[in-house]
Image (cartoon, rainbow, N blue to C red; front, side, top):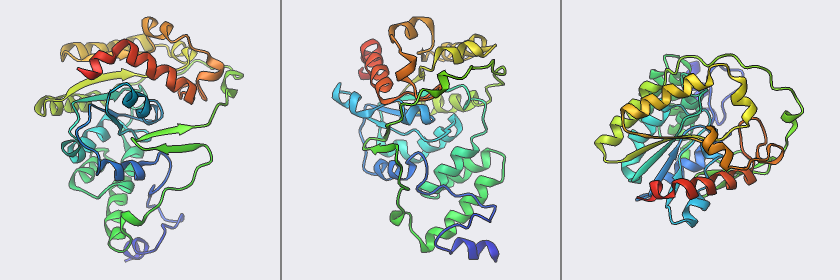
Amino acid sequence: MLFILISFNPQLQNRTNIKSATGGYGASLLRYRETLKTNNIDVLFCGSSHCYRGFDTRIFNKAGIRSFNFGSSAQTPLNTFYLLKDFASEMQPKKIVLEVYWITLQNKGVESAIDLISNTRTTQNNFIMGMSTHTFDPLKTWIYQKLHRLKFPLDYEELLPSKVDTYIPGGFVETIRDSNKFFIKEIRDKIPLDSFVQLAYIDSIYQYCLTNQIDLILINTPVYELVVMSIPNYIEKMGEIKQFAFERNLQFIDFNSDENYQHGNWNPAIDWYDDTHLTQRGVEKFNNLLIEKYGKLLKD
């Protein structure tokens, strides 16, 4: 009874242990609404904040590549897979670019499941997505949203205001952040990367793409080089992704490899606002480099 009473309140009370992210960080609410009006695109970008903050659809559209950014905060391949099952048939992408940030490949996908359940329609697929994290929080969010939407439809929700981020039609989030304070700090040795448990869901995405005649491309977006150097087993773990891609005849583009990174002519003081997220200047440099080197792959 308490759960039902909470669900029919205008706003979720912070004192409960039910989590909701409707209209919150990452602009998933606006992105979801736009997907309902988007179809027949060349490229659908999927992944974490490095995706929705890293691929500026305006730049790709200007280059003749009709695109949409379907990224969301901490989105893992598990989350991507169930998003595709709900929306890809309506959007009809020719290619899917999956951003493969190594941290999300180790995660269960709980944070993203709560975000997506809170900001999209409550479907059987996002229920299964929440259950697949093997934690209880996404399930509670799904039940809460299912009840809450009976009285407060998602169409009437609004995005919470941000002083530093602007949602751009097409799914991209532009930031005015330009702080480089992290460069003042010493980047200490990071712990070794753990098992990439999400590779199984990349395989599920691959199988989905095969069935629906969609080309899948894996991309590792550029981060500050000292971050890569500080991870003891980085090369070994990237080798796992390369082998995974090779066995399935997939293109894996690693912008942190020596070959691609050097072409960027990066300036750490102004191209990142933290150790892994690009400033708008960095985004433009990265996107133009991607189009210059791999534009044919994205268009064909």
